[in-house]
Image (tube, rainbow, N blue to C red; front, side, top):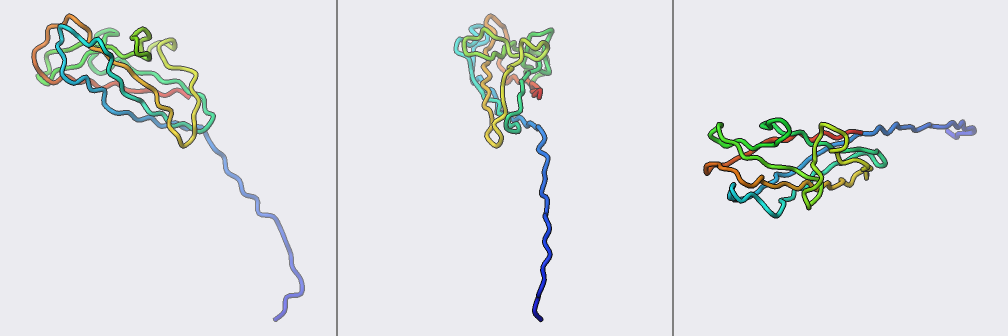
Length: 146
């Protein structure tokens, strides 16, 4: 059977791309330290933020699960001892990495699409502490604002 006539039309294809972000990180491991001496050299870990390309975002870190006021603390496995520490945006330890006020958040970031933005977080143990031998830990929620 022969086809003598045709009809044509247009298929419209459309998608809406929304701004989204995802965040992940490793563990900030201080290793073995003397709590009286603290840590002179900050320890670093990267927080990886993946946002839709071109999406502006900022990052905030809470004071952690064991904070007293704004002082972050790790809790010992015996559940009654604490070890104070700090988190910073810079390796010099001059810019606190927080979440309570906008000034403590890392701002001015832009999503790269499929490539994660690698945000460094520097940590140090506060010197002059008396703490027994133990394993200390804390959990610090990360918030991405976009």
